[in-house]
Image (cartoon, rainbow, N blue to C red; front, side, top):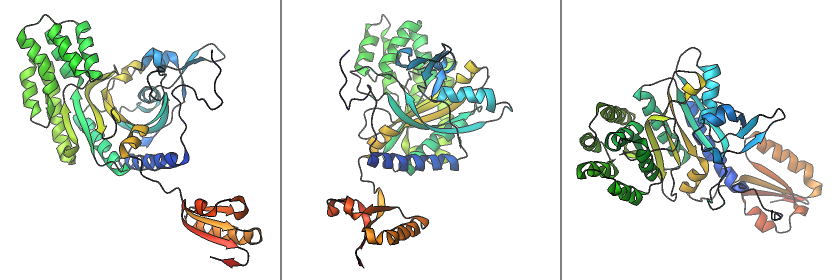
Length: 389
């Protein structure tokens, strides 16, 4: 084992410096306020969970879990995502009256990364879970809330791509017959490796018609018009039921008035195995990965509750990257004072604090470069010697 450098951090961990922290706080607060306005209540769950419950139920790969042992020898995990812990809480304490429940969260999650991955092992998600409602209106509400939250945060250019687990699943099983080959194709789609997908389809011993049906899946992207094209690709009723749900969802989205941010993409799949219906991803400029995702899932059954739910999570780090590096004013006012006017400075700062003005007090003897220091503030008051300026 090589010796660590003095300033080295564990693989995938990051520091958040003041300016980025302030910007993250502002974005988080804007999104959280929007969620509360829509009737969602915030919840917190432990950072550590039992591997046998949350760890095993989560769809995150076992190799990505941070594990440790407690004093009794039980294996614990750092929560790898928030949907599973919330499902645990909801199934045990919140769904006893069999009514819809709207929950929200903002929390750090942890996923071990390979050294060459270059991705964070700790990152913050903010999201919602709409539990115990199986209507398409529920799915439409979460998508409309997602769009409203991103706009309130200050992101104007983005797209929500919507698909359905049931469509591609039924198409693959209908044509390929075995889950092994279907899994291989799903992996290509998840990785957005469309060249690999096409090559894999061409390598299968299938009729030219079936190959064309599989390849047409990549073309089913766009507005409401692609729904008709999808009907020509799928044959069985279960696959057509997925299309019907997407048509109903589009009607809900239009009633919310947010259709300008929505497109269909029937090739969307997820690595989360608990997704069972409509699913979606959010894309924005400057970022090569989805900044958020969500959909309908059946995870509650693993905790003994016969109910479905839908929700979404937004990656705050990716959202900030998509928004660009605009400057954030960290402090509004500064009072520079000398020793003989210290009490006067403290009184002025107290008054400004009571008015809600961000104010920093600074003894002038502690500043070597006054001009450089005061550039960080919108306003500066000097209380030095016998005068004020």
